[in-house]
Length: 295
Image (cartoon, rainbow, N blue to C red; front, side, top):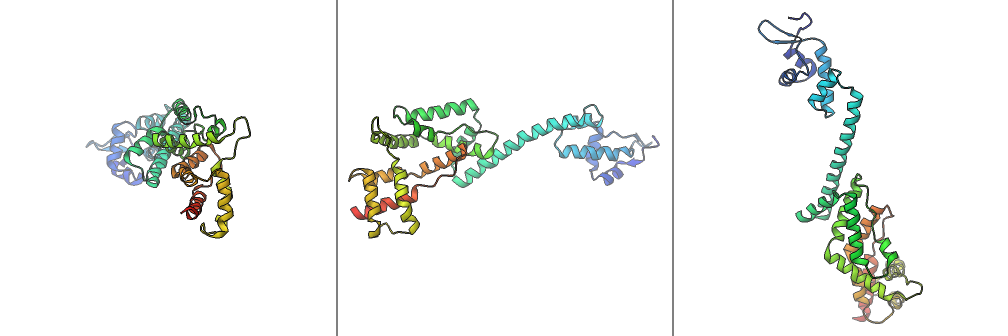
């Protein structure tokens, strides 16, 4: 037996905190080979086995495979190059895990069905070209022929960096909403109404919902009851903005779609815009104020 081989496998296990079973496995793989054996055939290890096992355990905790570890320990592979390649692999794994975390959070927060969850996962994994085609298809289906190019630009997302989990999550949810035929049809109906109200060749009219928001904002801030006589001037201004005496409540209700609010919120995340203010409180207040005066 080699005179330097004085550690039994049990002693080596106690010194390093690695189990006997694992050391035996590493020995069989040639990663931490015994320096010799006793007359009875028991393995004995030299003092260098302690340092080698420490290196092996560190590299294993970093996620390197055993074949790579053996080559690094035997100096067949330079550790800096192995580490650099491992960093790249870990970054990919981290992105995947963050995306999974983001999608799981979306499932929990939005209470998605299994079908919606599967769709979001598929959408999050689309290539850049596939994302571009999906956006182009949505824009064509909703805006084609309406002459609302400015509105289209304001409602179109830029394909996001898929490596950012928050953007990937927002994109997947946006894309799922944008592919909903009912949502597309409702949005196109609303936009068709906007297009019909625009003067030909003149200055475009202000967006109706934005006008309602601005007119109602002071009343909301003051906590004004929609049924209060003090709300009469606000209702009169909204009616004037509407431009006619009928159809005001249906119009307010048509624009008061929670999905449209969510669409705009997701769009802001994807495009890096400031978080938009929800139109729902203003539209709810306006609809109630008009209703109590026409009941």
